[in-house]
Image 1 (cartoon, rainbow, N blue to C red):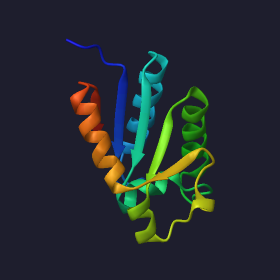
Image 2 (cartoon, rainbow, N blue to C red):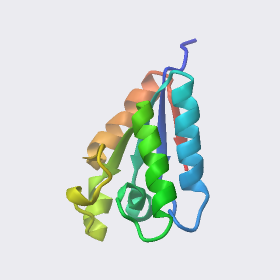
Image 3 (cartoon, helix red, strand yellow):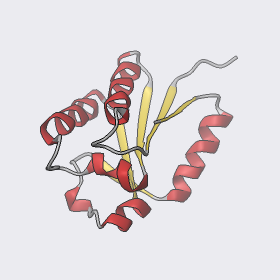
Length: 122
């Protein structure tokens, strides 16, 4: 049996009306503190809102928590398709967050599953 070395966290739920963003960030910090490689995918029109810098509601708390994760070495990717749907541009993203296309997310699902790594969907 292989040991878990990588964690893929997926956030698709509403940023402002759900505990999912807070849980995602807490899980990311925990797994990273355990020495695991952590990749957070923000997808769906609501999930990608977490990637937006200078959010109106919840901004300082969320932006600081995302930055803390980035500083710890957690990687964040923001779904290009969902971002295009809501008009979120690259220059509006929190620094350190990159876009990812749906095809690449699908590839990650296969790779993490084949490698017996952890995938959690929020």
